[in-house]
Amino acid sequence: MRYLFDLVAHARMRDMFYFSGYALYLVFSYISFHSATLLSSGGGIGHHFEVLFLAATLGARICVYFVIAAMGSRFEKLTTTALVCVTVSLAICGLLVTGMVFQFSSELSAEKVLPWLLGGSVLLGSGDALVVMLWARFSATLTLRSVYLYVVLCNMASLAIYWAATLLPTELAVGLAAVLFGATAFCSKRALDVRPPFTWEYSKPVFWGSLRRLSHPIVGTSILCFMAGLMLQISGQQEIPLSSFQQVSLASSAVVVLFLLLPPLLVKRPLRIGRMYAVALPLSAAGFLLLPLIWNAAGGIVNSFAQLGSMLASIILWCMLAAAAHDTKLPSSLLFAIALICPNAAQLAGTLMGYLNADTLRQSDLVLTAVALVAAYLLFMVALFLFKDKSLKGEEDLGNGLGGSLEHFAQRCAAIAETHHFTPREADIFVLLAHGFTIPFISEKLFVSENTVKSHVKSIYQKLGIHVRSELIELVSKS
Image 1 (cartoon, rainbow, N blue to C red):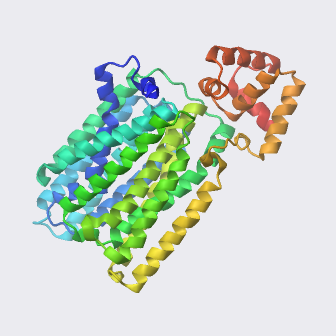
Image 2 (image 1 turned 135 degrees about the vertical axis):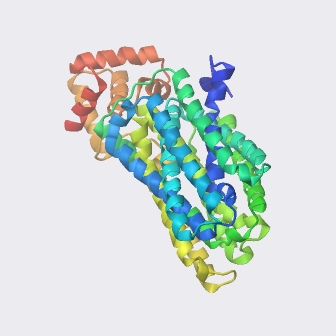
Image 3 (image 1 turned 180 degrees about the vertical axis):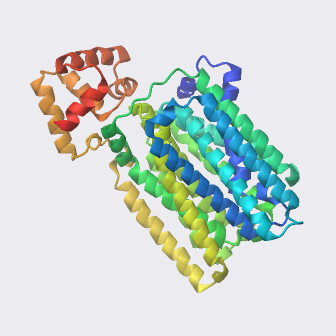
């Protein structure tokens, strides 16, 4: 439990409220995108419109992430205040347009309603992507164990708040979503303001090395998101009453989130959250294997399995991205934007594929059974792909950060260390510095104080005749 103090130390109750704003974002996301709660307030707009709404939202997210990735480290120069203003404006306008569509959908033809619905969803998806970047900035200020506990606890709190929201009349969904979004955007700014300043540094070798190390979890999470989007459309989910779906989803999510709390609380060794994929994959596979047998019975439990696998994988990826940004000082928005393009694109592809083929699939149908078996086989292959990655099994691979093999990287570092007469401890620290890791990370890794690390770093810089870490990284990458 002492790791919780990393987040709450010296924090006032008001600051803790700001930190909990991420839970409000999760509730907003549940209401707007992960269930039909928001769309149910529009009455019978039809399943076709629901799919188009979700597809346009995902497409808008992907476009915003592409823009952020294209901006690179320049996006970090945008002030939090300006970013919050743009974010809230986009989302509130999107909700207003969507609310008006729901209000007049029964009086206008589909041809007139559809452009407005798509416009509202694009605005809403754009605002959603930007607020994600704000919480990514905050998450990157935390250590791995702290951000993992923080995200899991926020998920627990969000389930409780979402349960309370399900008791409200569906007509209030649009207004509730607007209040939640405004609150989470405000909290994200205040949460960033009360955290210690965090200086970002961009280094091309470190950036590509980090993406290389994260490639396995990004691909694995993307495939699970594809499966979740596919399952949502082919499981006959739209035939289930909204209240039944909400109850099953809440109950199953609560069980999984409680399970996620156990590792950081019980295990004192370094946290290896990549191993959690061993839980996410069977959950998703179980949903597809049960699909031909029970279809959408029991409140759509088979769909819940697939969604839980996607949720769990997304939590793992979020924590890995935050830890990578924290440990390397890479711009968090750049790292998150590039990584999140893939899961969103995969979910969009799964949603459209499932929607276009849903009419040909029925319970006990031979084609549906084949789909289930192929999906289970694909997830098995994902498992083999993921767990070939040594970093997910707890083994460090410090050689891939600057390109080339582990042996070649070690030879380069050893040659420089020998040429400049580094001490054994300086050589150890030099390798971690060259890989892009920060002084706090090196201190934790080598079990020495930060002041000791700083003293060795100063000596290393003097021997190399350099002044900043980026010069050191360039020296190793070019040698």
